[in-house]
Image 1 (spheres, rainbow, N blue to C red):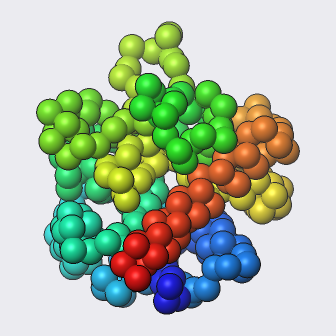
Image 2 (spheres, rainbow, N blue to C red):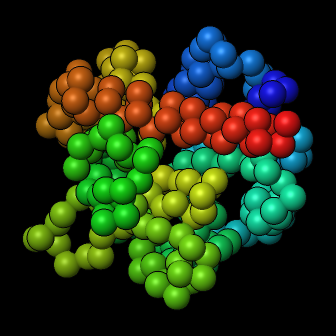
Image 3 (spheres, helix red, strand yellow):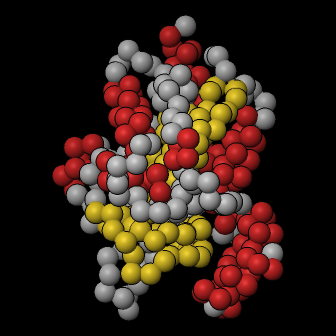
Length: 278
């Protein structure tokens, strides 16, 4: 097949973050594999109103700060148009090579709003840490989660949440809720949706599957970052995160499973489609 073109949508609006470094590293590792030929480009969606066109094969849209509810920013309409263009393109039977899209955290929340999956609202307090993700019935069958235990662990950092999914809309789209957040028996609050398979080619998580345990550990051990976490969340939270980042069964396992599997499956579909056509 021709070179695989990957578009990375930077939704961080210029804020310093670890997410883009992690995504670019995972995409770079994927493209460096034997038998994979391709390139990637980064689009600064919120600062520069840059949105890729459909010449790309695979799209990964990052997390980011702020309220995911549309507010009339100039980049929002092109972003939502891209979501719809990918959806409509994939529905056409004369397009054997599909467009594959992964949505992370802020992008995931915006997609849930756009496709009316459920209610997106502000959390009572920020979710920040490494938490268990509990698979649903559909999640137990999800190929991207195949190598992960139930529950598996992931980095969660957000002020908003997706709750109260609409069963009729899920059925209409063919979407499936794949996992939900940790059990909180002592708290009378609905558990947030943490991952959705929107379609065969579109997948999203409210957590951060790109989180690099080794890099994040170095980041959190910087004096300024460590002091900030302890000040805002307490020393126990900081120590718990450091321990989880060093546990090979937690973040390291999630990082090596989700995005690499998404990319591999997308490439397989693209190459198989070429083989069928030729």
